[in-house]
Image (tube, rainbow, N blue to C red):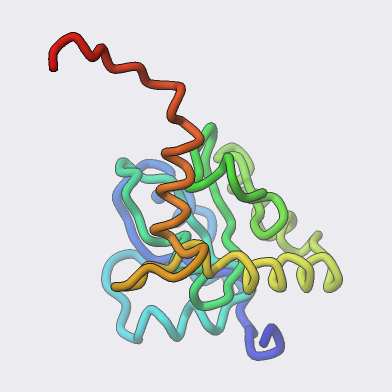
Length: 167
């Protein structure tokens, strides 16, 4: 599947200073495709044609970019400082993604090209394995996103104590 991925990296969107920094450094690059606003082609085609898909922290935390990347088999590149990734206490994000500090945006191409073919193959293979955990189904399937959320809540059961005297 990775042989069809001719583009090094892809990102589309705009809503934060970090997004602007990505556009500032990578708008005219031939290998890292960044696009502000609405795409003229289907978003899925860009994800399918890219080895890495950038998830750039914005103002909101409710984004589907990670799940979209995983669904289309694209290795997520999380560009953020101190970002709480979904299911991070259950899955090892470092095994299927690349995490880059916002200060390293100018080094992004060097970082991604520094990942050799074997390392990329392992990351991409792990993406294909972990993506089932991020998919929602009308009727939940074993280990899908519904079960991951329930399990994560169960893990945090002792973190929140609600007094019962109000009942």
